[in-house]
Image (cartoon, rainbow, N blue to C red; front, side):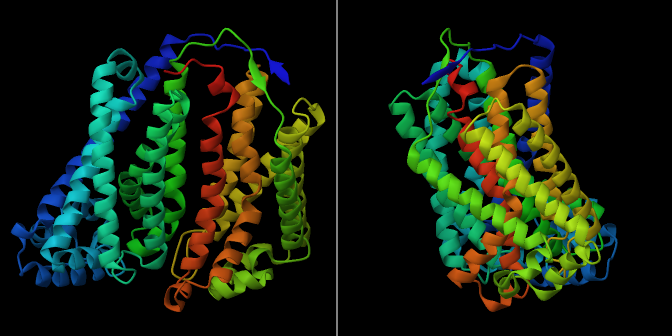
Amino acid sequence: MTTHCIDPPQTRPAALSKRFVLWAVFCISVAFYSFLVWEAGYKLLPANFDPSHQQLFDEVEAAGNAGVPYSEIAEKAQEAYPIWNNLTAMVTGTYFGFGTNGNSDPVRYYDSMEPVEKSALSLHMVLGGAVLILGMFQFTPSLRKKHRKAHRAIGGVYIFALFAMCFAAIYHMVHTGIENTYQGFAFHIQLWFLALSTITAQVLAIVFIKKRNFPLHLGFQIYTFAAFLNAPIQRYDWAVLGSIYPHLSQGEVNNLVNILTFWQCLLIGYGLFAWNRSSSPVRSTPVDVTPHPKGLQVFLGLTTVAAVLTVLVGYIGSAGLSSWSVAQAVAPASTLAAEAALYAGKGLQTAAFGILIAAAILSGMYLMMRDETSRLARRVFYVSAILGGAQQIIWGLQLGEPSMAVTAGGGFYLVSGVSLAGFALLALYFQTRGREHLWHEIMIFAVNFAFAPAIIVWGHGLWYLLDVVPQFYMDRGHGYVLAAGAAILTPTFNGFIGMMTSRETQSRVIS
């Protein structure tokens, strides 16, 4: 067993003040969404049913398809649609806000549901907004630490509302089915993952608070809050990306949003955990660093070999995803053709990318599993990760906007590249600051993102083996969206889980 001395950070009151201001702005934006979702839930109540809305939906959708200015249909839209739909259309234009392949279909379906199903969905919406408001108080460090009784009381209400909200969502998904879920199969699977993972995380949070394990309790509790943030973040993404791509349908843009949302939410959750952790005092004893279990070492070693072989085969003398038969069976031909066009006539550049990613995986895993003090391995990782991430960003920009043909556009490459290069640079920053505990924590994110180009191939292989994606949705790129989403979510999720027991977390007395 080895030990690492603690290098406590210097106190910076000004930085803490900036964090609080940022948190306040964030809370205002979430509270605004809570108001919008409460209004939508109220409008959905069976008592507010108006059969004339079905005709208004058709009229507004037709006007949206024609690109009619919002001012010309505002009265009808405000009568039939929730406020947040109208605000989206005001920001993005009516084609994106109300047009076909957007939110008009689910709003029309919600209006036609049976009263008990409407009530369940309305309950889900109202409780979702309430949980977001409660979470603001629960995860503000000063309130959490200074008002313990209030923290416990709010926590009890939070947990009760969480379970009720999740089971209301499950009831809705069971009765709605894939065919009536917005965007169909891909989004339906994501909703199930959110509901089940949130319930699991909440149960674990309760178990760990009973065991007085405060870091794990805080981590899993923040995970539930991050999961709830998917709803407001998704809608803000629609508004932002819809204003950038007003000529696209909301459904097309949502292919990109499906890749972005949970990545954004988990990073927000990570920042929230780090803020709460930094408010805790530093332990007076060094952190014990135990060797990795043999079984884990074998598993990670085999995974490393598989990932290196995947990227080398996929980018040396090949054309990325289109060279894999499992991807050809899952992803639309137009998506694969658009991606293959990135590498056409650029064999040397593509091969260099494969070598860079392989070098990042090997050097990163060497640092994490064998010798983290190796200067050579650190330099190899920084150079290969930053250059490999930059190449992915270039490809993402070249692949461009999402569409029904390209599915998610350059979303995967942009998010993967920004994450790989960004976390590598952040790790280098903490190294220069002498913050080895934080260096190690950030490296878990960085090294995991080096695996993303391999994970997206494995994701296609998984959906190919499961053979559960209906052909209708397969042809529309849902298998690709789920594989790309998994390639982004898996590294982020691993880093998020790793932070709960990281050396930086162990060096703090979290209570």
